[in-house]
Each structure stands twice: as structure tokens, then as C-alpha cells.
Length: 619
Image 1 (cartoon, one colour):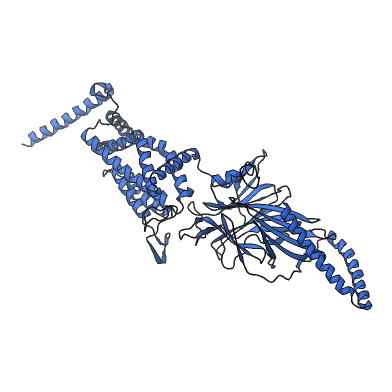
Image 2 (cartoon, one colour; image 1 turned 90 degrees about the horizontal axis):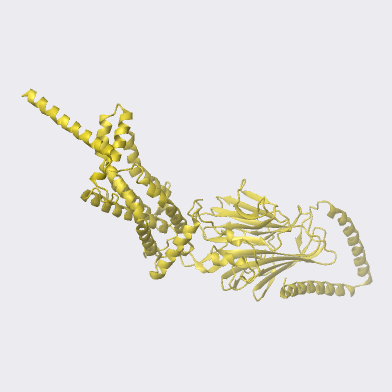
């Protein structure tokens, strides 16, 4: 603790001591009989104190009681350069923690504390590790620069008086602040114990903002709880909490515990994580708000006055802030090696590629300050860069479509001889210079870019509130809405989104152009129908609540692919060998292919001769 905090605690203790001395002096002016009675009461209290010493060694069931008479329950505001905080003297808690530099769709600051009208405030205390009864006493407070100091007096289960001092300390330019809890008692105070092994619990609840109406638990909107603990090799590793009946706790040593949304996070890390804290999390659904994820830090029992600090990062998932807690030179708190950047939502296995694409999107935004235009331009650039690969894929697809009549003819001719059909089909592919997998391999090579673009556009922080088209797509990070119904449509809800409809239509047209109008018989025809219509409809439901930026990319991708396929089909129609390897000519056709061509020619001539002979006989 710094000098100001120590001074504040000392002043609180002095006020309590002077108050007790004044009361003693007043009583000393009473009659001798009253003094005798007071001495008798004092002796009786001493006897009781000796008796409670034995009780302390057992599990006391008595409660901690407030003895202060603070009456002001009016909430008050406290501002920093990054926060606008609403404090509540009841429980010395925070009822609102607004990030002044980050706004929602309505232009209001994001409140990192999301609760309903009846929900608990953040940073309430609980005695021991009993999370059913928060401390809702009214605290007195003073504001000292960037500190808000709350105090209240109590008696422990054995009648000893002590003071709880809860201090919130902020620093300019920091989304990390400190919550310090001091237990200050006299010489007879033995700390807080016998409460299931813990003195008190400090909680962050009920949920991290921004607010939401429903929690769909998918990749587009979610709340997740993470821990950062030590693995078998002694290295810190982040992992997601797995709840059991909505609860989780551990007494293992952790670096921090966090609750995270897609863009914002609250992380609690004790200043001294060697105190064997009990880390707990509780998740509930279907209550006043759709889902709560609350964090709790239970401080081990004490046997003397104590002072403990838990740091809380409450802000955006941006590396420029979270990375600053590796070196003490980079943050105002002097913290280092906190591993706080691990609290960010991790990228895909192609994170390096995602970072490159993010840099490209940022550069495009600097040229044209519209992220929607930037996404379309980035899609075009990717298409140009991948043209050599996608050209082969488009050409192979076009050639396969053109071969469908011949393949169908072979299927009819050799329907009773599968082995012969396979041989003749392979020979046909070889003759035409077509590979059935020719359109697949280039697509597989483009797969990493698709994954990286998904990761980028699904959670890129700068897309929050990014306007594309006024009146239609005001925020690329959420689904656009053109109408809100008074009833719910099964699987879709009551909001009508236009982009998923346009995306599905573009996907169907793209499939039609890619696959062509020809179809094979039997099972192949059914599969083609599913790919052309069933797959786009399935994706419509999956992507209905996807961010607008992500759907804009996929729709632009489909439109560009259609244009590319149109171009390829037209060029092949004009010149069937337009996309063959340079230098290919008739004299370089393999001898086996030539023999196959000659055999087909002879078969055609034989068919024509037989038909002519039959015609002459009829005459």
C-alpha cells in the first residue's frame, strides 16, 4: 500500500479509538454505583472472552455484525479518462462501469457490468466462502484523488471489533484498477477465521457487458470463463472453464480468472496468488438476464489484521493494452509477466495469416475509411492473388461440365459393365486432359485464407460500430436488421436480416454456374440437387445471425466466383484449349490417346454403315 492508503486507514482507526475514549470519559462522570456496575460488566466480558477462545478453536457458527450507523445510501459517480463509474455505498460496490471510449449501436458507452434491475452489483463482499449472502451494509466513503475509500465497522463472531476498508484505485490510461480489502482491528483482534477456512470472498458479477437479450452460445455472441494456471511443466496455460451444474471452483494456484465476451473481458488477478485463494465461477441461465457468469475470489482465513489486493482488468480485448502488463515499464502499475494477453480470444491455427489480412484491411481503411468497402476490396485483391489457382479450378469445372453428355453416353452404354465403364471414363478424361480432382485441389489450397478471413471478420475489434451503408448496415460486427416482427419465426427469431437471404441466393446461382445444367442419373442427380439447393439453405440457417462483415465477404466471394466462372466458360467455348499448358498441340497427344480416338472414330463409322445397310434392306 502507498502512503495515502496507509494514512487513510490510520485515520479511520484513530477516529474509532477517540470515539471510544470520549464514551469512556462520559461514563466516568457517573455515580460510583454505575462505575461498579461497569467494572462488573467488564469482568464478565473478560470471562466471556476467555470462553470464546476455546470456541475459536472449534467451528464458530456466530455471524459478523455491522456496528456502524452510516445512513447515506445515495449512489455517486467517479470519472477517469477511460471509465465512468457509478459507486453504491450499499456493499461498497460498483453498480455501473462504463467504458467512455467504446459505444454500443445507440451511441451509449459500453457498461462492462451487465445486470438486471434485481441483480447484484459488482465487487460485493461475502463472509467466508458463502456466496448466498452478500455484505449489503451501508459504508461511509471518501474520495481521495484517484481512490475511492469505503469503511464500515464490524464485530467478529467473538465480539472483537474491526474495520473493513475497501479501496478502489484507478490510474490514467489504464483499463486495470486495484480493489484492496483491509481488515483493521485492535490488539484483541485475531483476524477472521472459522468460516470454512476463508475470511471473505470478493466477487465480480453478474455478467460482463455489453448487454444482450438472449445468449445463443455460438461463435457470433458468447460469454466464456477462462483460467490461467500452471501445467505439469510449470508453465502458464489458458483453458476454458467446464462448469458442473453451473458451478466451478479450484484451490489450485492460478495467475488469473476471467469472463470474456467477443470484444471485452474482465480479468481478476490477485496481487499475491500464493495465498491459496479459492477461485470460483457460477453460471446461470434463464433468469432476469439470459445468462450470468460470475467470478469469485475467496481469501484464506486470517489471524491478524490484513491487507490484500486484487487487480481487475475491465476493458477491450486489444493487444496494445493487454500486452503492456509484461514489462513493468509499460504500465502505470509496474506489473510484469501477468500473461494477460492470453485472456484475448485466440485466433485460428492460421493466426499468422489472419494478422496479415488484418494489416491489409487496416491499410485499405486508411485509403477509403469504410470497412465495408475495405472488405470488398480485400476480397478482390485475394481473388487476383489466387487467380492462377482458381483459374485451374474454374477451367477444370467448365471442362467437366462440357463432358457430361459424353459421360452420360458411356454410362448408358456400359451400365452392365462397371469395370469397362471406369476404364472408358478414365480414357475419356485422359483424352480431354481433365482431372476429376482438378477443381478440388486449388480450393483446398485456398482453405487457410477462408479460415483466416472468418477469424478476422468474426471478431476484429475495429468492426464494432463500423458503418457500411447508412440505414441498412450500420454495424459490421452484428447482423443487420431490416424489420422486427411482433412474433418469432422458428429458428430465426423476430428479426429479419437481408444479407443472409442475398448470400443464399448468390450461393445458389454460383452453384448453378459451377455445376451447369447437366446432371447425371440416379444418386448423382440427387447429390447435385442437394449441393445446389440443400447446402445453401442449410448455410442460410447456420449463418442467419452471423456478423454483417462476415456475410458481406462471403457474398462478395460468391459474386466474384460467378464472374470468374462466366469468363472461364466463355473463353473455353471460344477456344477449348485456352487454359491448357503452353505448347500443347495435336502432335504431343500420347499414342494411347490417339489409338482411343481412332477406335472411337471407327466405331462411329461402323454404326453409320450398319444404319445405312438397314435402311437399304427396308427399301
